[in-house]
Image (tube, rainbow over the protein chains, first blue to last red):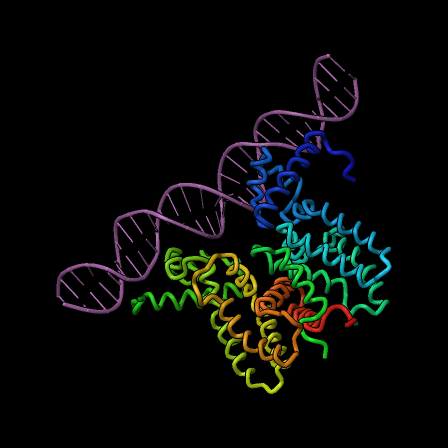
Length: 187
Length: 187
DNA sequence: TGCCAAACGGCGGGGCCCTCCGTTATGTTA
DNA sequence: TAACATAACGGAGGGCCCCGCCGTTTGGCA
């Protein structure tokens, strides 16, 4: 299915995506679809044709970054220190989340829908994180019972909570460190 | 200033607030101001007159819960175990955040504006948390360098990340525990 | 009771999301 | 290469929302 699109369709798809990236970067996950259409020089219906809803558009916008994170996870799988590997990946994830506006919002928005569709950002990130977490857990470097969903939720939360305040990157790093090592002193 | 409002003004104020509570509970921080006006049986301008923006309305809606949290903090100040007191309060805060839709959103929305105005929810919560945190820190129960802003941000993030998924209360508790005790095993 | 400021609320402008439908561009076949 | 079938386009219109304006009502006070 979905063999080959027509030339103009491919052209518009690329154009919309390009504009959407800029627009989302500027205004977050709530960027105006209509404005994206205007700037891209297409009708608003065309945007909806390529991306049925905001959710799909955001997925497409962040697919690249998600891919980069997945790649990084693969690299880190070879790191000799399982704990370090997990921490490094979570730091990278946090950096992405706090630096690229709307990504965290896209992730929660995605979670809100009953999706039979695979290939969601959440699924991909989860798949990327799983091996790192498992390895770290096997090495005894992780608190018992932690799941990949927990990790994604925590980082997403940190991103959302720091969004739009001075220096979200630094704040995010700080909060991640607290979360990883614990707010309370070990008993 | 702002001596005594007229009778109808007070009446409408109460009515709007009442409706707003229900509406926000149902639709989160993005509830329609116009619908609130319709249901309350007043003009939309009247809503804006009492609450210049969504932010102020949300503040008013949650003021009660914030007050309850502040009170609880005072109670807990008498708890013999400083660590336990802090944990209990954070759990209560998380429960509020995950059970009452929109509260976390209201908190971040509040942070986005340059506010010279005191009496924001953030300020009140911060003030409530400060003594508990300080006492716990003095007892050596808290990781060094943790601030009240950190605590608020973390709980807010947890609330946002769990909003609108199955069983946010349980998820929130779980994530809070992880955050407090640390995702990583102590080295 | 009568006055007047405080408070109200309807209305119009602008924006967004969404859908429908007539028009255009593209790929293909003769 | 010319004509056709259709994938893809984009403008227009409806519904909802936020916002500000401004003429009208209402409540408190002399």
